[in-house]
Image 1 (cartoon, helix red, strand yellow):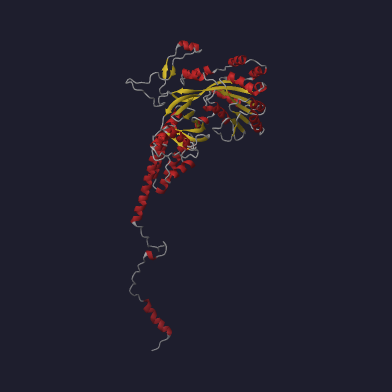
Image 2 (cartoon, rainbow, N blue to C red):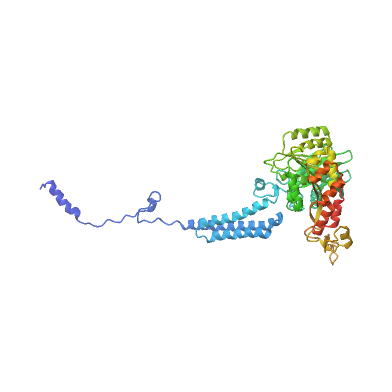
Length: 591
């Protein structure tokens, strides 16, 4: 029976509305879903346990590496403070405290990725402060985390052996001396035979001993049968040793190889330079060779880099002398005269005066017979005064460039002196000459300048100096001075209970020699300046203009409080800084 279409739909509707059995639940695998999206109600699967374990190991390894770095850097700091001579308790304690604080932050801060960086920053900040402090106290070859230091590290990592195959710097002897070039890279000398190895050791020993004894130069006279070794100490050449064959010939070659010279060249003059580091101090070594018919001579000049970079405050001037010298240098135009015997620190004092000026706003010229140390932003001019007219022309042409400050080391040529006399009318001029005292210095300067007018109008101060050794504070011996000595030294009115000297006995009760750990038995530690300062006032300059004798001039200045070298030296003795014998030795030096 055919039914209308509407009726058919009506019959089908109830059937569709009748509930049937529930369909089976469909399971959804999250892995089948794209990306990291999960439908609501479905949780992401937890990461595998292996990932947690790996992360935990990485965190523990990072903490252990941090702890190892703290231990290493702290230990290095305690050792390095002794090496550079700074406060071990202060800086070692600060770095240790920074390391402990950094580790505490890394462990105790709940968020690991915050705690560990915070700890690293704390420790790196304190360690970096110490590195900056210690780098300021040492010269370039001893600085760490610099371009030169990192270059040396890269060379080591690439397999370069900086010291050869042995422990010591060049020989394996283990002495506290390191030779480096001016590229800050250590010197490496190979030894193919036992004789060459012994020659390397001998070169090390001689140069180390020369530096330790304060020698300004080492001389090698290389003959066929032996090599004489001489040390220049306080201006005197002293025979130190005789090197016998078979070490004599390879010793000379070792010295030349260290300085970068041709070891087989014995006739043609050669020059070379290197650096030596001893007990944290850097020394410039300038080697020169000269061949003769019978022998070859090698001279190695030794310059303490730290001492050659001293400022006025480092020279040993008293506060009063420092003040009057500073005022004299501030006069423009003006003339300052420095004087000393040979090897008494004249060049060091002249350079210290130059450093007093602002070299960025002042044009500074320095004329020198040789240039061993250069000052930043200063024009150093090598000048040979032997040829008077040529030297005078060179000085005149340089001064025409309108410098603000002109310094001249070791003036002895009158033709050059006359040019400097003209320069005093517009510039600040600092002149250094060789003289035994201020009286002799003033007389020689008047002769060299050829005119009284520069002295009478623009001379501000005359300084004469010596170098005296300082008594070792650990082993110096106190004694009661003889009253007759005090009276002769014009100290009878002063109460002086004790003076000091080197120890009279250096043997213990068992008869064995006692070696002081501070000075290694030398009884002296370092040197300082002993100064005779003659400041000139208007009355003194008027006396010079009138042609007053030097004796009358000195009488006038003595009334104004000027003290001579002997009086200044006695003041140092009374303070316990040096001994009577050392002062007398220094004063007896001639120009």
